[in-house]
Image (tube, rainbow, N blue to C red; front, side, top):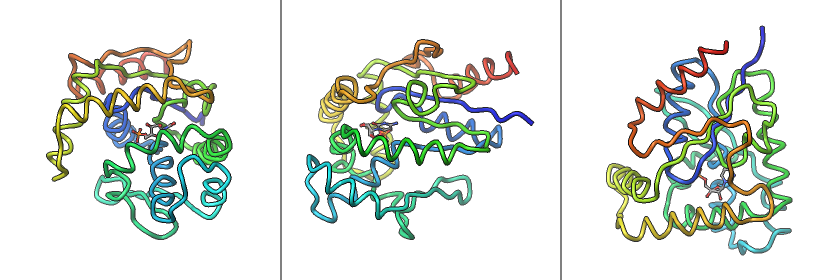
Length: 222
Ligand code: C5P
């Protein structure tokens, strides 16, 4: 039986993770949230007082970390070694520094290897910034979700409030812009749509519509 791989990339708060999670649940695929891996290392760097620009120390730290995913009651939980860090990796501090950690080439190389291993032998939906371009260039389907920054800031703001995280729309917007800028302009594996990606502008769409649209593409060609 042929294995199907789906790559979903896009800027921060474009809806990638939610869309990927729902699709994976509906299609019974594995969902790999690669952003959680960069966030996991960022959290560990903060806790171990490793500076974000010290690539070698970060790499040593990463080599001691096992990042894994488990699913309970339809929710994805993220673990570093045996510890559940699902909540801890979503703080503002981790969010704002993950793109610094993710800019180092040795870190990316190691995490890309791990991501490919997780995808081996499984039907998989993987979301991130470089999945269609670097991690799974041979993916059967590549989507690039985009939305204007105002809309994405609204979504993140709402999500924060729902999670009980303190939130300011203006600050979120500024932080999203900064993070997108870093992700798009870094030297290694910058955020961009693969040439063969299907670009979906979700500004005027809700999650359900995006999921339906992707399912249309998936069923057309299979
Ligand atoms: O997707 P999420 O917002 O959780 O990603 C956090 C950060 O991790 C991004 O801003 C980006 O710097 C980095 N990242 C990356 N490559 C990926 C996924 C995430 O560089 N494939």
